Amino acid sequence: MQGYVQIYTGDGKGKTTAALGLALRAAGAGLRVYIGQLIKNAEYSELAILARLADLIIVEQLGRGCMLVTTPEQADIDAARAGLATLKAALRSGKYDLVIADEVNVACALGLLDEQDLLDLLAERPPSVELVLTGRGAPASVIAKADLVTDMRAVKHYYDEGVQARKGIEV
Image (cartoon, rainbow, N blue to C red; front, side):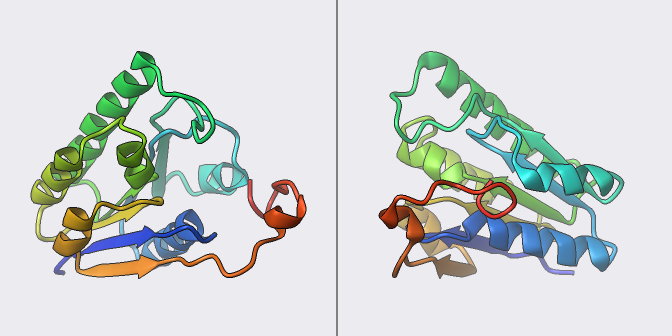
């Protein structure tokens, strides 16, 4: 089967959720899935159910935690670079039909990775592997190389009214 590059980006909610839905669909069809979560290092609710599917979907958190309101430290950059190496190894391993680089666009936007790092990731994708990149701020050069790009646009969000992230819905 021919694999493609998909990007889920934009300022709206649902990028990781869309990628997780694709992972479930792929696993249901017998495809092997790897999810590498860059910059994430917390107990998100999806991890509980994905642990039950560990024979079908491998998930690794490759970061030190969310940094949307902090300045990245060298340790964050080092973790992102190590995470990128892990993603590349998963791509090349021959073990996976679908590889999801969750929040890789954000890692680039925050300066943890370079735009060229993402272009190199795309270039290393074997033709049979589907690669999904999620996160806000996908670079234009990466978007140009992708086969499918979905831009999640925020129209209205209850966060703007002070609602906090809810377990099972946002976390």
